[in-house]
Image 1 (cartoon, rainbow, N blue to C red):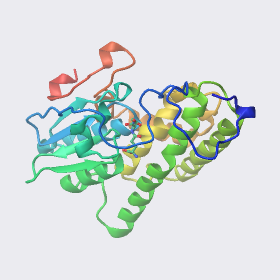
Image 2: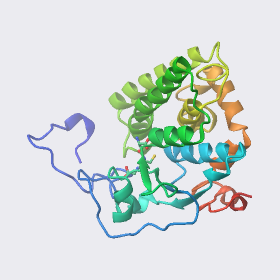
Image 3: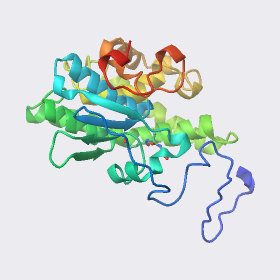
Image 4: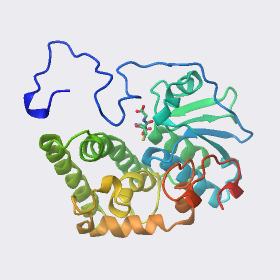
Length: 280
Ligand SMILES: N[C@@H](CCC(=O)N[C@@H](CS)C(=O)NCC(=O)O)C(=O)O
């Protein structure tokens, strides 16, 4: 791989399988399955195939919130998909998510079963199914959709842009780090201003927009995501910190954060969840 200053793009891009990046062994420029691998199926209505990354945590937090509300039909089996080992490219997973990214879900309570992929789509599907954490009144609903889609469109600049170049890239590159740090700080300021006179993102009610946004930006300001707390001066976004702290204290959030978790303190990891008692 050429260093940053000497690189001239070739006429036609070629796949360099050994580009040295952290994800070089799993990232590919083609879609589709790489191997046959059936997915396990449990007894509950919802079969979740995921990992406790911010996108995965959104869904387990919502499922735990629904169960905490007493929606017993929200029961779920959470199966682990180890993306570092390429399990997202197994044939069974690709059948429910042709995009090969966690999270993906199968709802067995419908006939035929319903597949849902994209974390935002899964949140909306579950919130509508259980009539919870999404407002019904049209203008409140529009505000919720606006923030939910804001999160879905914004987080790739945080994860795929800033996080990738600041934390995972094989060597530091000023141009992309500068560009994405600027964008992420702008996004934090968008949230901070919105939360200066609102308790939650859409007003007084906690909903799926908060769940989705907490998983990325709450994690960033509270949990030193990408070891960038100081670099991004996250503590200065005081309204975001206040909002994220409150969400993080919710028991369902604490539970959801542990499901499909394979890193951090071992006693907090719950690789698979098939029953409430799996999360002690
Ligand atoms: N827009 C998707 C993004 C999902 C996503 O990027 N998932 C990552 C983990 S957070 C993944 O599965 N990466 C595996 C890969 O890229 O091969 C969503 O929100 O569900």
